[in-house]
Image 1: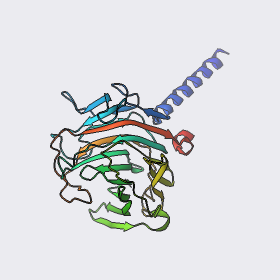
Image 2 (image 1 turned 90 degrees about the vertical axis):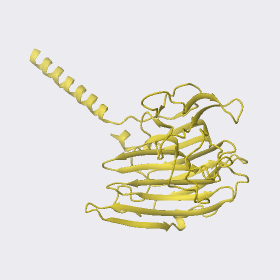
Image 3 (image 1 turned 30 degrees about the horizontal axis):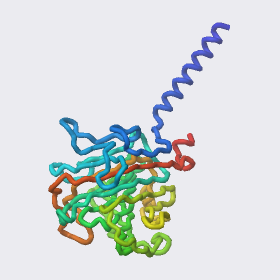
Image 4 (image 1 turned 135 degrees about the horizontal axis):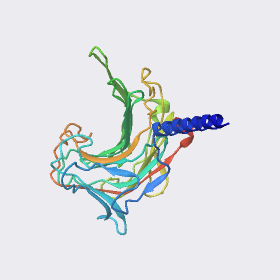
Length: 321
């Protein structure tokens, strides 16, 4: 009897140990949240602080300079920061996010009056890289040299591939400047296969027209932006400042354009981290000003009212195990 009891106890301990080990192997995912940045720290985000010294680039729980009674996260870009994404202030979710609805209320810095050729980017996005599934990135971006223009799209691919689906819109005029896909694959022998910008048509080009938002300027006031991420579809949108209704910027129903990649359509298929950054670019000018790659001259200020996430757990493969 004692031998049976000891055997049962041993099996139970091994089972519990295996379950704990399996649980540790599974990635941690955020549930639904809204970060209002009312405190000095965040329950949901880590700050990309410098490893040494003071970092004057982050001010959480700060009173907005442009809207009364609004507590914000303020980024100040450092003119001495080197060029490149991730080299300026950035917040990154502590756990993973995946399919779901993302939204944020943001006012980008007003810099073009002071420095018309500024090369600076505000990026609201998800990002992760995995050996099996490659890159997972969903973007909404603004270049400060012309904050009437908004960039939306994704980056996917593995084995050196840089696959892009994207749309560029001038929201002040309603003009859709492009809706495209392109790819670049670096092979093991060092050769590169490139497909240049190729226009989407039909179902992948919806809506094909947009009404102008009179006086739209992302640096003049707060606007709410977001996207809904499904396994086979991505919908980028914003809240119309006059009607308060959701205005769809691009409803991309994935088309197979990258057949040799885990993400064949450009809709990311990998868990990601939720992020927002502000950085200097020295090689990406805005469409309306080819000279706009100058280093920022001053610590321009970005204001973030809140960031929100609502997961679509029914599509998350990790949660079905």
